[in-house]
Length: 367
Figure 1 (cartoon, rainbow, N blue to C red):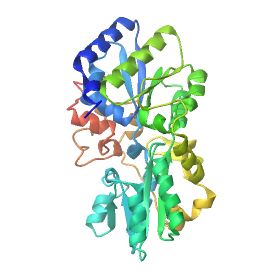
Figure 2: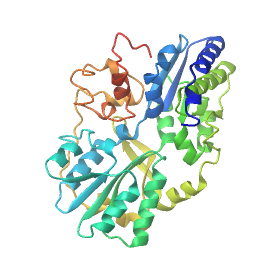
Figure 3: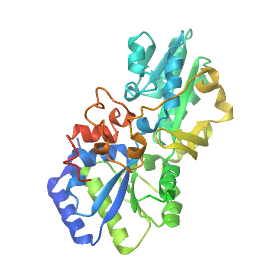
Figure 4: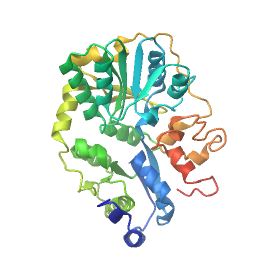
């Protein structure tokens, strides 16, 4: 694939590591926000190859992991209703709720279907007018434009049997919540390139200035991450705190204005609960009033839900970077990808899944 192997060149990777060793004069702690970046760092062993003292803190950038338990329990309760088709991306099906998961619910007869795009759910609704079709709309700003377009298209078609269960979260409020924590150790951020491809990076500039933290917009390949880390360390060593863009091949400062317009048209900013973290003000999206008729949470009154997290799971501490997966007593034993206790062991972007896939144990982990 063109422009992929070039970003995995081991010779260039060694050069970047040498530059980092020459540049760093003291310990630094950098958080990568995105779970996809975490998987690259861990899978390629980059976090273990960094110069001594440079520590990566794995952040809450996995949309599956931060989807609140109450949303999952509500989705399962709705899916169990007669005449309902629940459509979801496949990575949500094995995320544990309070009592079960969507995959197990499907095995017991619920009509839960995997789709590959929100518009697939709209087509399901158009093709099954005798069913209520509910799409589980989760994710950061990256997936919001496609979900917005699905709602707009459903409105254009006049569909009355389509709705979305929204659990969109926003990156900047999560960053500020972390930085406001008196125990926060983060000194710089690697921002998620795909989020910034949609939103640009202007909204990060006040954060960098207020908290005096460098923020580097970074891609997902090994050389992207190594260069992003080098850029962050260079700022830290120089006492600078700016937003820089490593991912210039995909991201512009203003982002994708058409995608932003779709988000603003369909959604409005709202308070949002994050799994393992709690409620953060103005940290998510909900349907705007004009499109409230497509809100599955309003359409289906599922009462009596009492979400309860597994007491063994330390997902909250892992998602905020306070703990590593290998700090969890259940990691790799009672909690595995086949039998997960929490979302970070399920998702393709979850930190626990990344550590487990890389064979990390408590004795080997140095990140």
